[in-house]
Length: 424
Image (cartoon, rainbow, N blue to C red; front, side, top):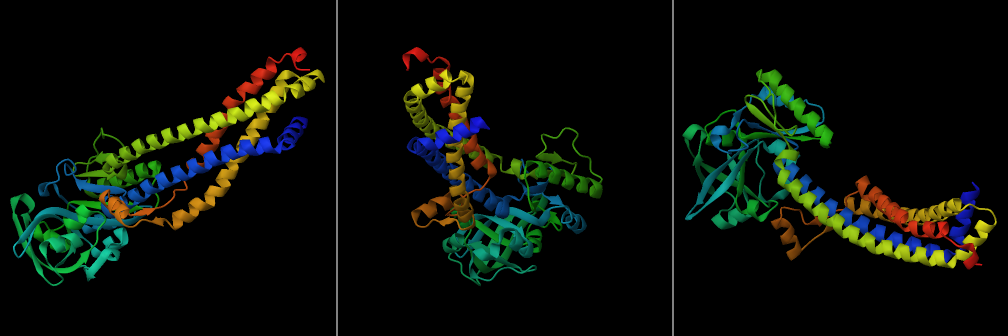
């Protein structure tokens, strides 16, 4: 208790020195938190967009489809099993799909495109596709029309009500050819998708490839998914399929993110988005390097303050030792003093940045102009949200305390080696 009283007196006795130390820590932690929060917020938004529109937290495919995405590797699944999938804990959306390729033609223009068969109702809940409609009407469940990307419509010069011919390959080598009336045009996430993608209903897609009850895959979205919940969710899906189909689970799966039965493969988003996650890890490494450089600069600032403080207080140290305070206790007192100053600066930075991060997470900064086009090219929505993960804030306190521990070595060493006769 007496030690803490002395620490508090020392902190407030020279307020200028205390403010300098706290300010250097505050600004370093403040900018590092904002930098990391913007960085992680952008990647989180990209992952959410991809999971919501293209991936899903869990995917079910026919065995072999992921490695060779051809129509013959499509899978069959009955409606009863799909309904059971919707009853799994934490599952919020089950979206069966038929994804294939075809040549789209209108008039003299032709282009190879990706054709996605969807359930309009489920897709609206999954990816909010109706909000991207820029012309015409959204599809109904048994519609025989087509939604085309806005860029594709401009390339083909096809408008609402025009009839587009699709020619492709059906199941087991059957030829696929059908006419579709353009119901609407959508503005999709990236320029590639916008220029070469179209949506039709599941019944129309199954008829197009001559494969009733056939799907390229089933995308499953869950309420909350972290690493542990992903493993539990994927195992629940496998267990349900095994019970429904009397399938045999592969005894030596590649990993917990990819499990195989004799008919299906069940894939976690950690597996299907592996390249994106690797890119994020690389970006994190660069971000941490930048923060390390920033903290090294701050560390020298703190060390300079500590050296100044130590040299100014040598006579004080000698007096306290002469009055009976042990050198070890004095060294610990000075170290605690430095720790508290640094901790106060870091906590102040967190108090200031936490509400800012929550505000911009709920109200992300909107990007426009050429910068927005660049975001679209990389498949990201042109916004800058902030992330509020706990580690973004706790990592700063850990870094500050580590720097303070290193800086405290100097006064401790000086106190232990202090010669009383030379500092009277």
